Image 1 (cartoon, rainbow, N blue to C red):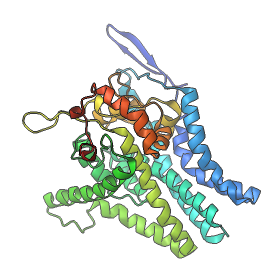
Image 2: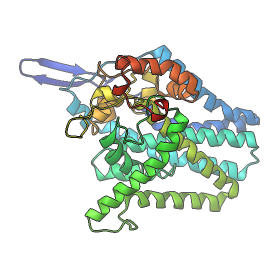
Image 3: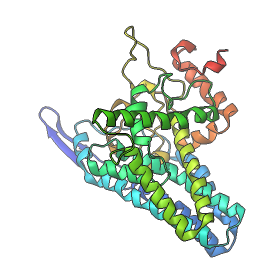
Image 4: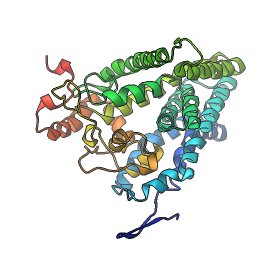
Length: 381
């Protein structure tokens, strides 16, 4: 196990080992799960086996979160510069990018060249869409970083689920307006995930385009140009999907167009649970207070955090957006989710259960004072 060490005057030697150092590799290769589906059906000849990996994701991951529990340990701040400089961690995010392309191309080939029934087709669409939701998560980790290579890789991986506006909208929009009524990516108390999706997905597209248009105008450039970051990623999507449809036919194109919205909904689900009902206080000058750890729901569950490059330590991500995933911290005052994101998304998909479990926890944060929450106006009518 690799040990980070620093000696400081008056503090002596400080040592730290990342017990998940090699576990993070799972996130790099998890995108290949749909290929496991194809392997199962080719070995067994039974189409129903295409559903097995999807069922394993939504049963095994929550069970592992329960079994392995939570890990609240933080790396010592004195060690963080070494962690941030260790290129091993960023190589894992780099490695994930081609995995999403390999999976999309292979599944498009399979559905376009094999006799796949509607049940098997649905299994591959949903499984690939779920996995490509993690492509957006990988783009999220890369897109927050300053090096041009990482920003370009973010645009590439976002081409897989056709979500080209994400990093523009997320970095310059969501991070500015998070936990306020103005933020289309912050869910409101009493709002179901389906009501939220109707607001969040189109709202993100509009806001991303407006922000990129404004950025280009400041540079004296037109929005419909090669300098547009959104159009760059979109062009990659069009080229990729057009190439695959040209080689593997209309059935492959149908697969590509159907899996993409499922990937979008995975991001919608993550956004839904990350800031549900939380509200930053509005100051006398009309501005909102700075974002604090208490403005994001946190989860320290080990299994799902490994799969998601530590996305669930979301409080620290918003507190220090440029921190790399291996350095993100737990805060005692951050609201805590009862399960990792995989389990929480299952709960959110059944609104009556979500509200029964999460609404009391949300109200407890503010002693029942709705004026201190970001509330869906429809429940106040």
